[in-house]
Length: 605
Ligand code: C2O
Image (cartoon, rainbow, N blue to C red; front, side, top):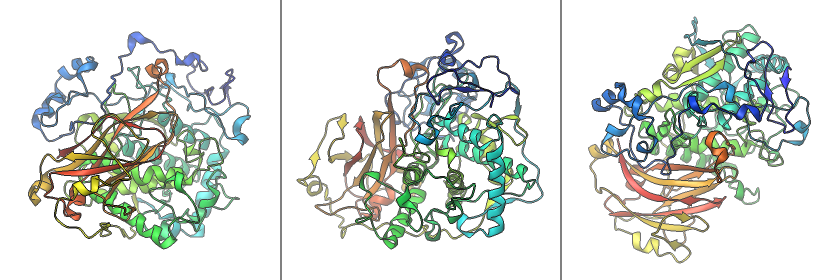
């Protein structure tokens, strides 16, 4: 590998192939220097997601977006973001997220697992770069590729995938198609390796509306490269069918230590037949007290129903919050990214490694072949979601549609793709094997016999918890907050038009720590609430991804500020609390130190 690696810190070397333009390929830390004159300032928003700025159907907003004026306005950082209004979209302007500035690639120092600590040249996180960028063209094909459920494939399929991945692993490290470089794509885009081209601000594809499109493109190219290595354009990657009982364990094709689909860095206690926990809490993982396999399956199905249906009534709830050109990241993850996507990463990763590698830290996640099967199911859920009702549609906001990424294709060309071209999986030439969707009718159950009387008072007065009414909250114990509802007793038309959303805002924590807390609504007395219960509205959970880019590296604190938005309409209906003036929200810290700046209820269309 032609890599420049003068840096003593592993994982920081800038990895450049001799085939590519190397004009500005200085090794870290020199490559951190940006040219400030060309770069716009990042916009710092302390409040992450208080506003509804995704109304895509307002003609006024469309006009605003098309107007050149918004390009002037994006320079005025202070005006943007926190000043968008719930019922007035006229300030919801921005720009699409541009391609990364490839020359800016840096990755902060990370302690590496023992067996890859001392390899020479050191592990890098930066894919090769080229200044020749071509525009994406849709593929031509005779037949759709069918991505199979991993637990259903036969030996021939396994042999084929094994062969393809073997060839991919055998490519030289500086070949952008190599498995090593495939993993680096994730590292660079997901650990703050890049800045947005033209802005001195980190590019991050998690925790926003870019999450699903980015990963769809990532899998698309991964699959095409594998297919080309075995000369089989019909090759399709498998999906880890964790939303159905017979797929809820690590698929056996990934567990043979002699195959190229294997990764030694996984949690040894989570091997088959252990059932995955879709809302995994690593602080409370004890084989002696964990639910039985049968119970875990039921809890998982309930989570799928909650996340795909109750918590996914609007595009923003499902796909994630708007993140535009020049924005600081972490605007807020969509429901699926939060649960089960993130807990599955942590559940799979190896707790014996420094940060739960490979799956448990974004720098390394792409080094486990299981990653691609995990994300294929995440991707499949996007396609399934669009079949679940007429409001389940992609954004039409131009800032989403026109956002761009760069990937290498099977011919080593650097290709520029747009979010809008990812929206339809069939146009990209693939579909998913048609399997059962067992969670559609799998509703949660209230933990108690519900009465329609307002129970808030007695619930909040539970002695074991602190009732708080001041913000910010430092979440170091269980707290309850009474939250007023903007409207009550809405009719079904109103509910269909607008979803009632619980907004937990300004969730703040150090980016080098992991956090998790659970959100419970209107629970009572001393009943322990589990994932199977309606009262369990959701969780906030993070995956480690250090980001020390752009301005951040000069700041004293490297805090992440984000938000969590949870659907209340189904939940309150099921708890027969629709006529109550307020709800009681209980926050249960699970691990990590978190501060929360506000909680409120919004209506979102
Ligand atoms: Cu980019 Cu599952 O992470």
